[in-house]
Every structure is written in structure tokens, then in C-alpha cells.
Image 1 (tube, helix red, strand yellow):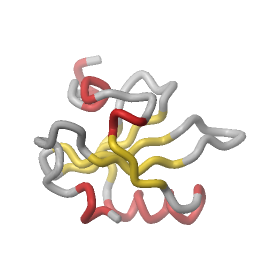
Image 2 (cartoon, one colour; image 1 turned 120 degrees about the horizontal axis):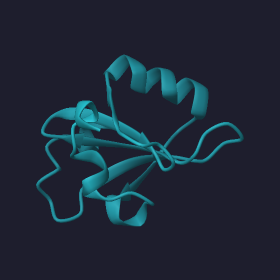
Image 3 (cartoon, helix red, strand yellow; image 1 turned 60 degrees about the vertical axis):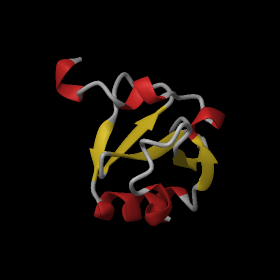
Image 4 (cartoon, helix red, strand yellow; image 1 turned 30 degrees about the vertical axis):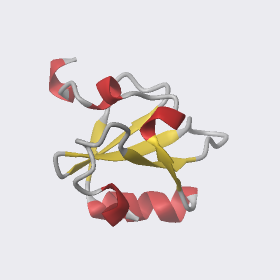
Length: 87
């Protein structure tokens, strides 16, 4: 699944791995920006860097994500590009 997102940020509408909303979390989205995995929930004030291990942990706890174009999620490119340290 991660291979589907790798090196795709330059595409007009990059693919995103989308985790469904649960009782305790909003919809979660994972994208690969310049080779780095970034995770953000719809209601989060920032994105978070994600390691492959964290991604697999998320798979175990939240189930299989859906592959969608970023434009079909509640988030945009801007939601993943500012540094979390500058917010």
C-alpha cells in the first residue's frame, strides 16, 4: 500500500491512504510528501510524520485504509505541506 503513494506528491492529484472515521478518531489520511509519510486527521491542527512501523500499528488498530485521490478526502495539499514545528 505504501508503494502506491511513494514518489507521487508531484502528481496533480496524489493518492492517499484513507482510514475510516471511528468512535474515537476522525478520518485519517496518509500521504507521501517527498518520500516522507505524513499522517493527519481531519480535525487535527497539523500533520505528523509517520514511520512505516507507526503505519503498520495504525493498520492493526484501525483496519485497512482505502486508496483515494487526495481530492476525494476532506484534506488538501496545504494540509500536509506546512511544517508542524511552525504552527
